[in-house]
Structure formats: structure tokens, C-alpha cells
Image 1 (tube, rainbow, N blue to C red):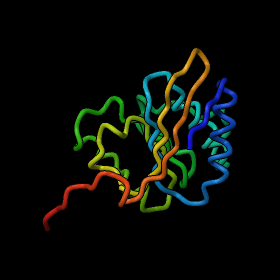
Image 2 (cartoon, rainbow, N blue to C red):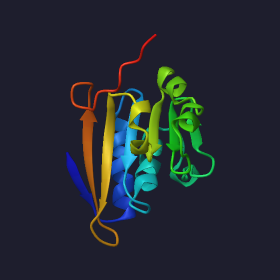
Image 3 (cartoon, helix red, strand yellow):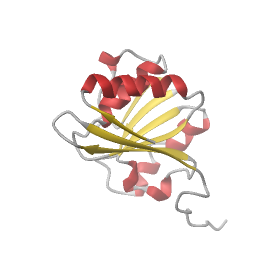
Image 4 (cartoon, helix red, strand yellow):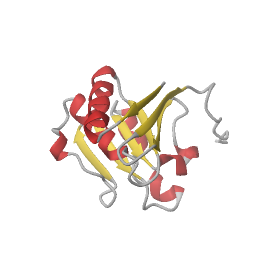
Length: 150
């Protein structure tokens, strides 16, 4: 599904609708350039889930993880360089407890992500216009992760 928004308010409203529609936890990758609207959409999703008001939602660029409730987390991997740094965050534990985990810059570490996830790709069309492509990936539609040996 592809959606075009024409303002920050429209992007937040879309996020709010998505947050209300998603009934379970899981991983949502927010993919796009700096300033493309990833955190703006996250604000709406967090509010739509009833986890926090929009004004309390900010980019976790320096904190790495913001937990807005036990069931909604927002992660930013922009400042991390290695898989070991990402693994140390404990993303798997957040997923296992049923949290909706929003991840910015997660596409940099595909081997650490579950194959079953939602990817939202942001494209800047103009000063305020954004195109968001929303895809649900399952193990059969995403890149297979390498097999591990016990």
C-alpha cells in the first residue's frame, strides 16, 4: 500500500490510524533519509496505541530506545556501527514480550531482524509531501536469514 501525505499533521494522523489498527506487537521498520518523516509517523503510532501523547514522543537518536509503555518501543540505530552493538540493545526481548517495536535505520542490520515484519519506506516528494510505502513481510517474502549451527 502506498500513501502520500502533504503535511506533518497528515503524517501524524496516518500514524495514529496505523497505531489504532495494529492489534498486536511486532517489528515496524521505518526506512528513509534524515528528515523524511520517520519520527513524525512514530509520534502518531505511539499516540494511536494510547502509549503517550504526541508531545512526549521524540527521536531516540541519542538514547537509542524510548519505551512509551511496556508494549510500545521506539528504537533508532543510526548511531550504531556493529551487529554486536545492536544485539546488546535486547530488541529480541522487547519483541518476545509482545511490544510493538518501531525501528529507525534498522535496514542497516537486516540479519538481526525478524523476517515477519512491517516495512514503511519514506520518500520525500517536496518540502512537506511524503510518499510512504507500507509492506508486510513474512518469511516467504523477505530475504532469508542465514542458518545458524548449534
